Length: 487
Image 1 (tube, one colour):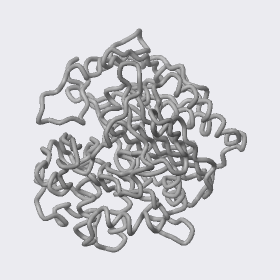
Image 2: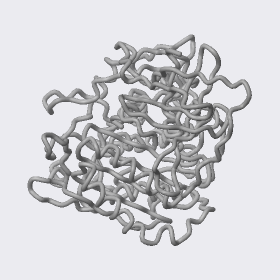
Image 3: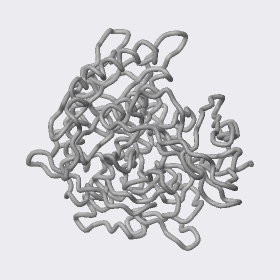
């Protein structure tokens, strides 16, 4: 997970090679019991450190394995001023874009019913029109792979309840600019996720928040999960405050409002509810007697769709590919202004975990550090062997700019990546004043040198493309590409 703050901010609301994933119900890899034993104590230790050093106000961590909840623990405070501790079972957090997985689930339910064709033009299901680009429309499957070829768009939040705009109205008045043909390059799209939710609403005849409650949350027993804002009266008292760190103390923030992009990230949930969703996904779409998806649909969600950088993980369908093998890991991150979340699933081992933290800016990185710590403990890897540069290789060094941005506004050069040589087999990458160091592990391929815990994970960087069209990709960012803009 790349340690650049500006890159992670792009995941707010927050974040190809054909490959068949193992069926979600086929758990063929076993995690040694020693890695699972003491896991709760391990998380306790990491969180104790973060509460002391990472400006974390409150957090929840939930881990499941083979259809059982290993633990769901709360840390810190749901209300700092009142001294109300986080309850790992009842306190509510904002998953941010992790809640997109409910939207993709709803969309595939409609595919199963024959109401939606993955290869159809999205306009087939809309009452307004998305323009084509070079004669090529956006297909429904392009929404799942975040390849609609659109500009990013702002205005995702509302300042107060009285200024909330229904997501359908927001969507129809903010159609982003088309930039490249759909299906050719991944650039994370909140707008595409909103379109997916609207397609569900149109073909089902049910309002989106009603639909997900009736067909996903209620069957799975997720009574503490909703897309509605403001929160229903029964849930509001259990909501953890969001926080910022100001003048040396944690200051509570008003409840954030993401209803303008509801299907993309207005969800609220508990650790216990997220456990039920993870167990259903890891069990081929079923939990107990309830089934929300066919096993084949879950396999599609977890199967590769499109990758920007050859040899690095790409997108699945809705899910990000976190690791391609050893074992395969898929997941999704989510960031609102105040909450930072992650959900990681290992379909081969039956293990999944959900994390959500709130607090100062440090809690943003804290979420990622805890994610990496859990992956490194449960699924350890070793650093890649270092190699020498191939003969006559010339690296395309210089300034790189992300393809995920609002193209209606001027780009901010201060956020560009500055990639420079550090000897014949090493690089530095500088972003907003922070520099990381990378060593060569293959042609055009580098691994970040870090003080990571034993077991990794280890971030990789790859140059790809051709003269005049050089790109840069990171293993933890399958949802974005970086263009060389200034050698």
